[in-house]
Length: 88
Image 1 (cartoon, one colour):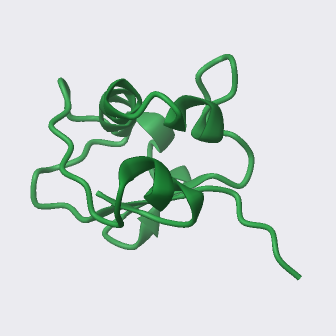
Image 2 (spheres, one colour; image 1 turned 135 degrees about the horizontal axis):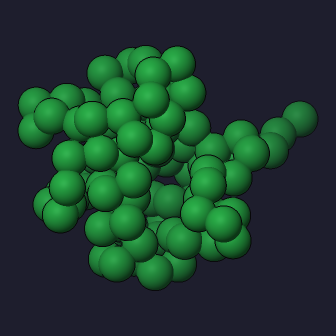
């Protein structure tokens, strides 16, 4: 998993190893929250949906164009997590 912006600081780098308990995006993100609790408020709403402008990509494709948080992730997939980023 690759993480960007402020998530790099929380996770201690750009690339992190995540061994989820399932094979869906939500399983990977849940494991990340278990590993790095600060991520929870950065990426999830209180009802466990991705916050607006948080994007998850698998092999360069945004999961919103697939099965969203239920998208199946294979071990060989490249996954990236982008938090909201402000700029000007």
